[in-house]
Image 1 (cartoon, helix red, strand yellow):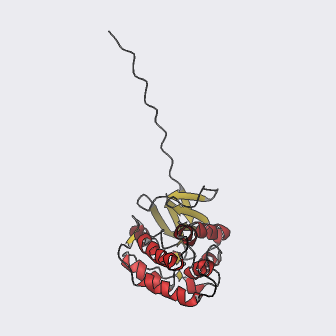
Image 2: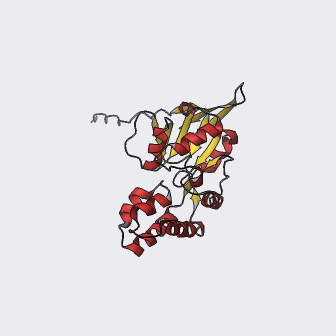
Image 3: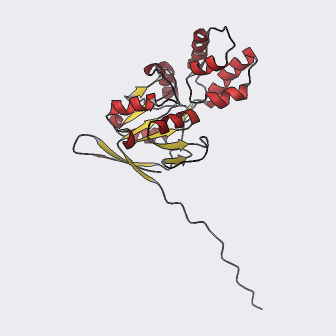
Length: 234
């Protein structure tokens, strides 16, 4: 007795990879190149417990933002904001256990020409050096850190400054970011943006998403004016 053939399984077509062609690539650090979640949460938990603050609310709003801005937002009136910020900074600098690079980040930084990339982070330079070293990543020659700007993320100043230092027009730049504040800064700078991880909400035109760099490929070609044409396949 014959049986009717089973219906063919429905399979979704594989998504086509996205290809971006740019002249410069800018990276946030924490959550984008480096996973330092455990340390960041420890420090802000101690801060929240000291003053009886809502830890979850602090975490929700502090990621990607300069520590001093978060301290000013949440510390009680009359607190010494500068001293508190310095104390929190020292706590973060002295803790490196569990700091690791995101998958593929080391290869990504190695494959891109150093003169065409920059780090743009809300951390100060000392903390950025410590975290990158702890994660086994090479610090790009161009780095815009907290002390390099007058207005932190979500203001676009840091990303615009990095693009200028690399001699790249914002329209020819792609930013890798994970935090809403940093994504807003990159978008305000007029730059294409790749969201790393699941934060950042819905993607808008000019935005893409990756979980990490393990599937990202890079091709770099030097052009006639000495710059680089970078092709990234996501």
